[in-house]
Each structure stands twice: as structure tokens, then as C-alpha cells.
Image 1: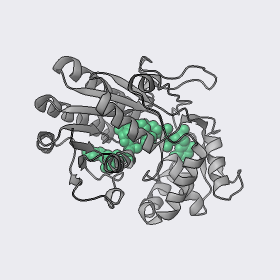
Image 2: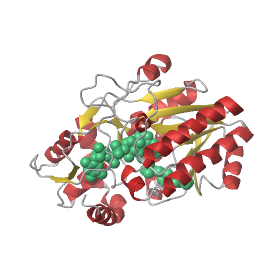
Image 3: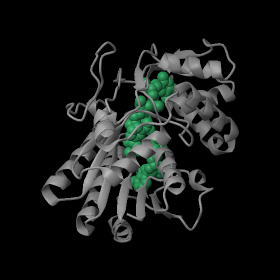
Image 4: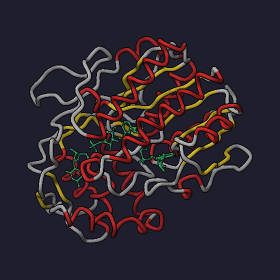
Length: 332
Ligand code: NAD
Ligand code: TDX
């Protein structure tokens, strides 16, 4: 598998994966990305041109997709509309990209017999109570809450059906919340870091009791590479690094690490249908494929991420005002 096609490779996690491939393998990468508001060429700027090729295009473009699949040994599919708050505002692009886009790729994988890895989220499983000892496993029933997570759930089910009905050589992974460099400022952690840099008070939805299970994007990448190389066709693997934290604790830690009083934030209007808690049990990936995460210390990873945003203001500044205007229009 020397030639890897990465969809959504100019986005947050996709670009981290491309950096990971360049650093840890000798493979050649083609990125297919539509450069929506979430895609950024600058996230791939410092990579060698003889290893990474960029193609601007849409995953719903069947002719383009067919050509790129004919040139690839394997495809890793990150491209998606990814933000829950946007999906509450306008669900339509989520259906187009997450459902029709994934369908378009699966049809190409079927024609070409291409190895296909589908990137998904723990949100397909719905949410857990705060005091529930259970965590999500590969056998947890699907129960998505938002337009975003329901379209991701739909895309996962398409992959399963294309494996069973047409013999497509696919695997699926469902990962928990990622943090790290190159994440769009609309998302929780970069929004609060860049707010502090700009002297805007961080914004916590509701009471801030909601729990997310944080994993560094580079650990997500090493897990995906492990599944691509060692995963069993037709199988689903959950990816997580035992990083449960509630939002209030994360905001307070960001403020502390940035030299501000821990209570210098605002409570704002809660997200509609806001999932309470996500938690991943990644035993299958660890025991069957031997994967372990490298970023065990969330505080150290968060401090490095804060430093990255301080050092890369030109990367995030163009999006910041528009994102804050959008949130302000919703009382968030
Ligand atoms: P992102 O929004 O940062 O990036 C998405 C990328 O896909 C962008 O570069 C965008 O331009 C591109 N794209 C969107 N529509 C496209 C289309 N129609 N054709 C081609 N390219 C298109 O998202 P992200 O946070 O990096 O998430 C990547 C994947 O990982 C998604 O599938 C998401 O569901 C999944 N995931 C994300 C997280 C997380 O914490 N962010 C956790 C688990 C799973
Ligand atoms: O300003 C904010 N204040 C706040 O309290 C924002 C933007 C978010 N939040 C809360 C909502 C969530 O409980 O923080 C938590 C994280 O929010 P997001 O960054 O929007 O992530 P989430 O909705 O949990 O989804 C993320 O993880 C799973 C990704 O965006 C998805 O693509 C992925 O599937």
C-alpha cells in the first residue's frame, strides 16, 4: 500500500494524518479536498512536494473520484462536514458530503477493488449518563442525536452494507474528540484558546458538565495507520485514549495554562440536543492490533496545543471573526 489517497486531507485530522504518514512511512499521498470553509492548504504547506500531491475537488464528483481511485492502493476517508453546531443551523451539506460523498467513494472502491478505511466518530452511539460505568464498545447500538452524527451513522452503515453486499475491502474506525494543531477555531478547544489570545472571555455551553473523551490527533493517526495495515476487513475499531474530562474543567485548565484566572469565562446558551457524555473502550484495538496511544498527559498535550495556536495566529486569524459573529448570532 504505497500510494494512499486521503480525502479531507486539508482539514484538521486529515492534515495531521498526512503529516504522520510523511514522518513515519515512505508512502506517497494524494489529498482530495474541496477546500470548504474547513479546509486549509496552509495545513499542508511545509510537506515535501515529491511525497504529497494536492487535488482540489469534491468527493461527490464521481468522475474525479474514479480517476483518483485508479491511481491509489488504499483510501483513507476523512472528508466530512464535521461540526455539530453547523449541522443544527443547516443540515443539507451534511447529507451531501457525509452520505452522498461516502456513497460515491464506496462505488469507486467497489469498481476498483481498492482497500478503503472509513473515519467515523463515537457520536454515532449517542450519549451516556455522567455516572454510567459503561463506555462505548464496537457492539454498542447506534443512537445518534444530531444531524451531524446521524449522517456519520448513515455513512458507517453504507460502508458495512458495501462490505457485505459487494465485498468492498473496508474497515471503519470510530474515534473520540480530537485536539491538537490545525483544528478549526469553530471547535471547543481552539475557540477558547484563540478567545483568550484575543481578550475575549471563553464561552461554555450550559453548565459545562458535558464530558468528552479527548485524544491527541497524532494518536488518532497512529491508530488509523495501524488499522490500515493490520485491521481485519469488515471490522470496526473504536479509537480512544482514556481522556474523559468535562468542559468546565477543560476551560479552567486552558485559562490557567494561559495565565488567566480560572473563572474568567461566560456560561452561554446550551447547544440544542447537547450530548451529555462520550466515553470509548478501545480494548479491541489495543489487544487485537497492539496499538497504544503516546500522548498520555492531557495537560502537556493541551499546553503544546496552546503554544501552537500562539505561534500560528496567521493560520487561524482569517476565520476567527466570522466564527465569533456566527456564535454571537445564536447567543453563544
Ligand atoms: P474538518 O471539518 O476539520 O475537515 C474536513 C475536511 O473535509 C476539510 O478539509 C474540508 O474541506 C473537506 N471536505 C468537506 N466536504 C468535502 C467534500 N464534499 N469533498 C471533499 N472534501 C470535503 O474535520 P475533522 O475534524 O478533521 O474531521 C475529519 C473526520 O474525522 C470526519 O469524518 C469526522 O467525522 C471524523 N472525526 C472527527 C473527530 C473530531 O474530534 N474532530 C472525532 C472523531 C471523528
Ligand atoms: O464554544 C463552545 N463551548 C462549548 O461549551 C463550543 C464550540 C463547544 N462547547 C462544548 C460542546 C461540546 O460538549 O464543548 C464540547 C466539544 O464541542 P465541539 O468541539 O463542537 O465538539 P463535539 O460536538 O463534541 O464533536 C467533536 O467530536 C466528535 C467533533 O466536532 C466531531 O466532528 C467529532 O465527531
